[in-house]
Image 1 (cartoon, protein in one colour):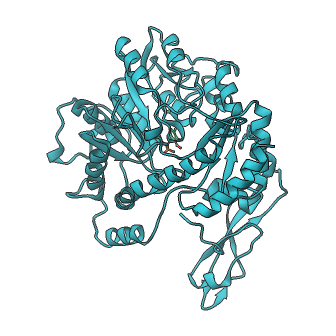
Image 2 (image 1 turned 135 degrees about the vertical axis):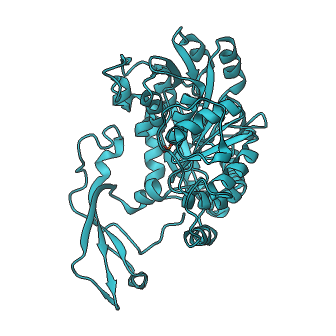
Image 3 (image 1 turned 90 degrees about the vertical axis):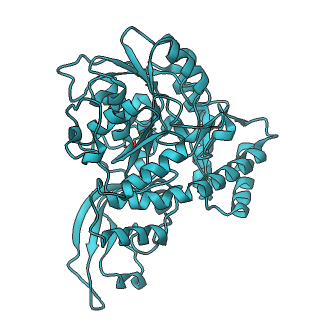
Length: 474
Ligand SMILES: Cc1ncc(COP(=O)(O)O)c(C=O)c1O
């Protein structure tokens, strides 16, 4: 979504013309740059750039902005406005009047219950299942919930081991721990997806499932993973949270394993703010996930009778309002993907003949969502310094060294490394050393990711790439 300039801004600036829209918020610094609470992005190299800010609610009444503005939240924000846009507002999805209309229509319909006939949630599920090419889709509150339901569906139980890459958003590992199972960390290769060789080497008698993560919209080596899992009788729950719309050898991600988990949070190709979906081709797995996500089936309507025996569950039921948004968002997916891919191709073409930067290998370039363009540099120092220079230049292209992406790198997963879970007193955790996956750290450290919004003007991108090329080819 494009930021609403003027409605909020670092330094308390605002545009009075926006004030006629009743209430609005100012973001006001309330401390010095560098102050932050213990544990807050502790491992982010750029942490010194955080500043505590208060979100102040201002009330507009009859042309007068209320002086007794009420401070309603204090949180930590990145100090430069540009960086706020990059990290908080720097999303890739599009959001417009169609979503607003869909919500308005639903809000006045008195049909907010997910299990009503023709609900927005079931409409979305049918449309999404079609898109992914599976028989069943189950929309729910988040990608984490979808992973948990997928693991429950395939029968992962306390004490089982689940193998997953050492580079993914930490929620992948937390989903495993949430049901009392043990995450086993596997190296990623230069593509930054799970290394099939290391995966095979880490399987034990306690292994029950694998979570290949299509990180940054990049498909994993699914052929090799499927072969390994078939031989060793392991289930596959694909984490396609960052890869809505991606494919592997022409087959949609999320339809290759036993289940696929998707996220629609704010930093995804399509978004409703927070949301998720589980996909599967198996009626049995679908029923198990349905039972678990819906309070042990307590709220099934009679026409949704299941053959699977009920068991206790949680409540991850989706809001109808968010499903109404998702229905519209799904229609935007192809346009977003094609614009992301076009921009990625522009970047790759530009560096095709530059020796100092090698494009990172992609397991299936045609199925890549195009979210990020990765290059391999000669060292971590080179990747970090290129990242810093590109971001300081304030271009429409931003950069990141994945080693510095905080909660995506296993060394920053304190609770996972020390085996701390809500069930840890009942189940022995697994302890990891910070150097458990050295090759992952090496690959992450040498990678430079370039990121552009799908709406970036191609001429602006060209100009920005002139600058980036100058920096990388010195
Ligand atoms: C790879 C990956 N897995 C899981 C999740 C969890 O999704 P959610 O935030 O919707 O719970 C995310 C979210 O960003 C993710 O990127």
